[in-house]
Amino acid sequence: MEDRFASLDGVVDVITGYMGGHQDHPTYEQVCGGETGHAEAVEIQYDPEVVSYSDLVHVFFEIHDPTTADRQGPDRGSQYRSVVFCDEPQEVEQVEELMQKQIDTGAYGESPIVTQVISPAPTFWRAEEYHQHYYQKHRGFCSN
Image 1 (cartoon, helix red, strand yellow):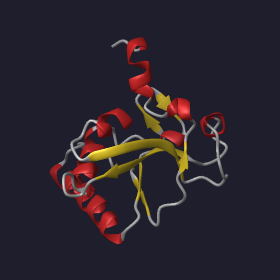
Image 2 (cartoon, rainbow, N blue to C red; image 1 turned 45 degrees about the horizontal axis):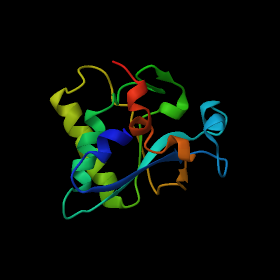
Image 3 (cartoon, rainbow, N blue to C red; image 1 turned 135 degrees about the vertical axis):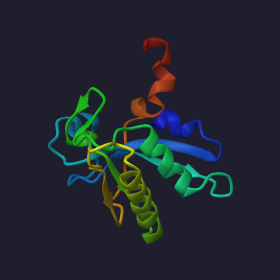
Image 4 (cartoon, rainbow, N blue to C red; image 1 turned 180 degrees about the vertical axis):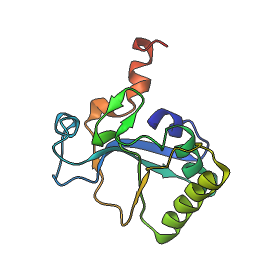
């Protein structure tokens, strides 16, 4: 997700981290172990004059499968759950409106959307430096 959001006009920075768990300052190993309750997350800093929150929400739903509980692609576990952490009531409304539109239009067929919407957003814990801009750092090592 980090790479896709970072490529959008108006996005100033995308920071990788962890949210929604019960341990302060979790490490990647702890989060991946599934014991902290955190989800892997990104914090997006953006210019609302260039890109709207609604635009970011649309991209979120375009780049992942909101119908799979505790899984994204080959990654499995509660740390990979589909979740949006919101700071403002308007953000919750925008996320819920988009999810309802997707249900109404049958965007995912009969599969229910399992995305959690959590507000107020809990503390964001920045991931270790080696996780920041991961795909940019490792692009040469990945093959498709």
